[in-house]
Image 1: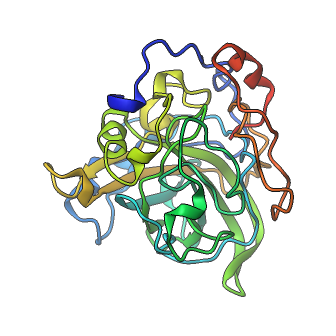
Image 2: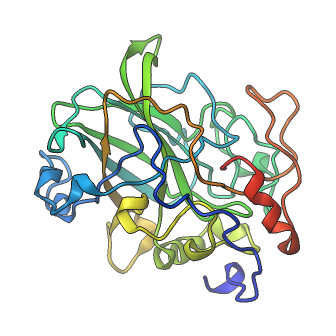
Length: 314
């Protein structure tokens, strides 16, 4: 990172990488496909056309301390949150059956805002120096922003409108994802069924660098964790959740990005979200009245990051 976000002397390290060779039930993923760039509204190219795609494995990781039940089924999850626009196009396929589309799979995502805050935990300190979440001046609901479900069409495709996530200590920029099957939409949310995969989506460092130099991201300063130093991302590219990104305007990152990835699941498997990867200690200061469990306190210092390996993935 450049500017306020880069510190080449960072001593935080990957305290616990995703366990090599360990694949939790349902923890399969296949590479994002670039042919989707040509048509972001039509039918996506089958992932089975990617050589070896269904043989690519990715360990599931824990859901982290900021998960909330009851996210809404909706395409636009921004609720007016400021940030660089991001359109996500995710395709769910059956990795046990030639990467055929999984119709009706529910994809759930959640992530932090431009300053590193999660809805439901808006007093949790994102690390570094950032304005209070209450200073953003938007009309977002503090319990629901940047969370949502979409249900896959006949081609297994879901599409979200959101913003490029910010970051918090000691994690790199990421989006959490779960894939559910067997449930149904009820009262605006998704109920029943089972979770087939729990994982995270990641962003290339050079693109994150451009975005974090813009407002409102630039108001959050400090030691940003690049991919190579993240405790969850294991360097496996799309197989490890790295999104394929396309700029809306090549010379103006503020116009936004489109992100693509194909997720291969085993529809018969169930993933509890326990995962196998360590994710670092989450920021301190979570509210005592948070809708779900309070995240552990105590963001690690540079010298204490090794202890983060014992913590839940964030």
